[in-house]
Structures are given as structure tokens and as C-alpha cells.
Image (cartoon, each protein chain N blue to C red):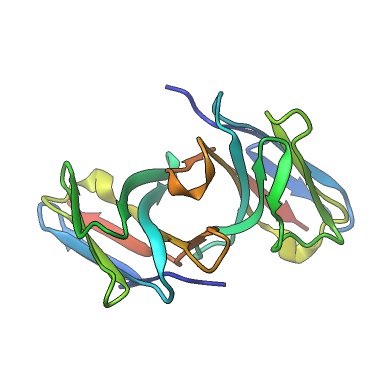
Length: 114
Length: 112
């Protein structure tokens, strides 16, 4: 069964350091999402890609966060510099086309900022 | 912004009993989805119900949608220990550029 891959699974960093997360969606899925999930809350969309183009990044803190999907396949989410409040689970998901379809999630990256 | 709100926040029942979770939302939607999240498998899609549908079944799951009340319910029948997880509703709201907006979830515990 095809799955969304994410790495690393866990990341511990000190504040002001840079961190990067990688996601490889299910093959053929044009839409890719990055979410942030704080413990006890639902996922919050950070950025949505359609192929290599950003469709929605209204909730992405652009002063420190960046995301790219250069070839329309895998994607990288970067935080620089990391802050204590960035500690959370970062989830990547993909879907066939937009939000009308189910989203398939990766296992997530648990980020702890010290 | 939070569109969906699940109720209750937490639910603990005996194995074999039925579990009902509710989701309310604020604006008109195209569809509503339910997802399950546990530590073992992450977030998994359970069922999608479109705004023109009123009820949908999938195995032991039954979802209803009442667009006049802007609410949905998820019923899990004959619960099992493996159903222990958090359950989230997510709505595709018409006025949010079709962004999928998630509630805070219901934490379900099935006691053996």
C-alpha cells in the first residue's frame, strides 16, 4: 500500500537553529499539504501545493518558515530560526486533487525546540 | 481559524458499546470528513460525506450530516479496544478557499 513518507520522525533542536523536514507524497498525488499539530488540537494548515505551485500559505509564518516543492513531487519545510513555540508535530499529507478528496497522511515529524 | 468543534472532548466506554461523537461547524460546506488518529498509525481517513448526503455507512461506522443544523455525528458500533484514538472532523468550507479546516477532536477510550 502506497504511503506518504516523512523524515526525520523526531527532531530536537535548540532555539535559533535551523531545521528542515522532508516529505514524499504518494505517487501521482498532485496536492501536498503541510500541517502543524499542537498536542490536544487538530491539525492547522501551513501550506498547500498543487504540483509545484503554492495554492495557500496564508497561515505560514513567512518570517521564519519556508516551503518548496521544486519538481512537484517531494517537498521540504524549513524553519529558521526555530523558536520554543514551534514545538509541535509537523504532518505532511497528499491527495489526488484538492480538498474534495481524502487526504493521506505521513507519520509526522515531532519537533522539540529547547 | 477553527471551523469544526467536536463534542464531547473525551469519551470513555466499555468494549462492545456504541460510541457517538458529534461535530458542529459554522459555515456552509462542500463536504465533511472524519479522521482517526492514534499513536501507531497517525491520521487516517475514515469517511467523507458530501453536503447533499444525509447518511453514510462504512463497516461499523455510520456518519450523519444535518446541513440545516450544521452538524455531523459519527457512530461507532460494537466498539473494540483498537478503536481507542482521537477522532477529528474536517470541513471543506465554501468561504475558506476550500481549505480543509479541522476541529480539536474527541479522544475516545475503549475499556476492556
